[in-house]
Structure formats: structure tokens, C-alpha cells
Length: 438
Ligand code: S3P
Image (cartoon, rainbow, N blue to C red; front, top):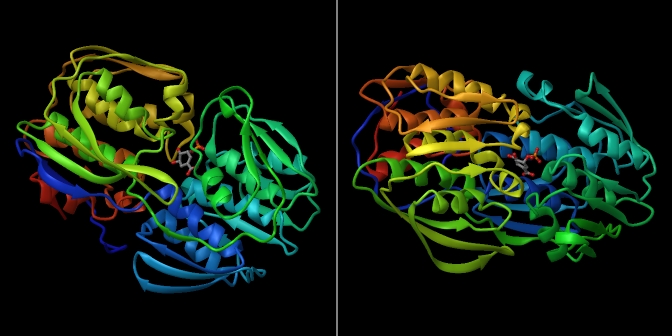
């Protein structure tokens, strides 16, 4: 899997059935965490099937600037010598990676040297107060720029806190838990719903005392620890990348596709539950465990979907999958109504507004709501030129829309697909999609 295979645009034609077996690259969330935890663990970590993509390479570059020794056997196989972070000579550039900057801020808050965390114009627009507020409650010394990055972090002694998160965000939860490793006493984070729990799983496997209590296990407590054991892990396939192939296969005619080795962590499988409720023909097999995460193969066949209502906790379990769900909803019979999904407005882009705007160019009718959207289907899409807005999940969702639109769809600004899914075009083409990357 190459990290830098990027295309400016994708040209799509309808009609290709998606068949055979396909794998997706390593999980982005797990890959960010793997290299950060390896950097602070004591000793040499081994990481296989690491996601070599724009966002995760940005995190790896920041760690390199912090003096971390990284041996790269190939794009996806790394040995990392942890335990020796030192001050970076320049600001850490997390590019477009929200997970990268928010989690690393938690770690940097606990170091005895200063750091500056920054990123792209897009990242500078994203809210950081959600992490700086709780980190400052712990005693962290952070200066932000109008509630965003750059973040200037100076050394400070951290205290353990108990913090109730206003939003169910795994990035916020993880930033606090990682800072909690450096606290003077234990730290508890209370989440309103089940945000992805990769940080908790990984910290536990590295010998950290971390527990989930309270209703639904939503109060997570970490005990400070400065001697994490090194990691030895193979990163599972990314469920959020698999989502594009699943929906493409479901909507294309005569498809029968198996996506292999996908992370089936229940905090990530909201889309699978929703697609099943919509009537999708999908089946999970070969259940196993990898790196403390459940994995399996997902087989899907062309399906006639029906619209449903989605809200509450399911939303958190599929927060990155709403752009592609919008495409599925357009082809589903009846009404699909999404609520409680306001968080979509502060992702790489405002994903409700941007998807609605671009899909309308393909002739779609979408009712935007403050916290979601309503779509009446099925709708036929016409070919047009649409734009990926430098947001990987927008570009890939529009590509799938192009596969079911009438002839002649072009997705411009498609290079960002490589921020999370290098090989996206190759996976679709290899399965039979009529896609021409340029
Ligand atoms: C992520 C958490 C989610 C998700 C993002 C990855 C993570 O963000 O949207 O793509 O790895 O922790 P929020 O925590 O902002 O919901």
C-alpha cells in the first residue's frame, strides 16, 4: 500500500458490479493512537498494517520532530523506540488531522518542555476549546488562537480531575485520558454516549489501570502511569473505509463483495446496524480478534434499501459514516431522517451542508436540518461535476454517488481521499467499479 498515490480527480460511469474480495487499509483511529502510545512507552514497539495515509503520516512526522526514533521497514510496518520525547525545534504540523492534534495535545500537556501544535488552514478552523477547557482544568498551560490552533503548550503540573464531557467525542475523551497519565491522581471522564474506545483498549493492553464504570460504562477512570509497556500489534482494517465499499456494492447492480478483516468494535459499527435495519443484504463471518479489537469479514450483495430514522447513541457509533449514508438514503425507498448529528458540522468540513450542496449538483433533493437531514427516496441522480472540498469522506462519498448517477460524473479535489484511504480508487476498480482516476 503506497502512501502517496493520490489523484486530482475521479471520473465515474455507472453500471459496474462490485464483486470478489477486497481488503481496506489499517484503521485510522487505531493507527494514530498506536504511534503516539509507542512514542511514550518504554522500549521498542512493533506495529504492522499501520495506515500510511495523509492524516496518520502527519502524526508520525510530529513524533519524529519530537525526537522519536522510527524505523520503517515498509510503508505499513514500523518499529518505534519510545520513551525519549524532547522539545521540537519547530511547530508540530498535524496538517488536516483532528485526531492527531487533539490527542497529541493531551500528551504534550504532560511534558516538561513546551510545544506548539498547528495544522492546515482547514484544521485551524476546527474547535479546540473542547480539549483546552478540560486540559486547563487539569492545570495545563495552553494558549489557543481564538479557540483553535495553533496551540501553545507550556510545561505545567497536572492534577487528576473528574470531567463530564458536553459532547460524546472520542478525541476529547482520549486527550483527557492521555493527559491523565501525567496527573497527580486518577482522572475520570464521563461521556454522554459510547464514543469509540480504542484509547481505553490500548492503554489497558499496555498495563495502564483504566476502568469503565457507571451507567453503560460511560465513566472512564485512568490511573497515572509513566511506564507503558511497548506495543506489538497488527492494526485491523478500517470500518470507516470499508463503509464506502459496502454502500457502493449495495447500490451497484449485481454486486457480491466481501470486505475482509474489518474492525468490528461495537463503538464503530453503527452503520452496519443501520444498513441492516434499512434492509441491506449483508453478513458477517470469520469473527476473530486483532490488537484487542473484534474483526471480521463483511459480505454484501446488491440490496433494495428502505428509509429509517436515526438518532441518539447510534449517531456516535457511525459519526464518520453520514456522508456515505446520505448517498444510500437517496436510493432507499421512503424517508430517511437523521437527528442528533450536529457534530457533523464541525468535522473536516460542515458535512451536512457540503454533502447537501454537492449532491444537489447531481439532482438530489435533501432537506438540511440543524442537527441532521431528511431525504425522500428513491431518487435518481444525474451526472455532473462535484467537488471533494479537501474532505476525504466527502470526496469518497461523492465518488460512490457518481457510480450510481447517469453517465459523466467527475469528482474534483479528490486527492484528499488519501488522507484516510490510500488505494481507494484501486479497491473500487479492482472490484469492478467504472472509475478512472486522473
Ligand atoms: C476519532 C473520533 C471522532 C471521529 C474521527 C476520529 C478518533 O471524532 O469523527 O474521525 O479517532 O478519536 P470526535 O471525537 O470529534 O467525534
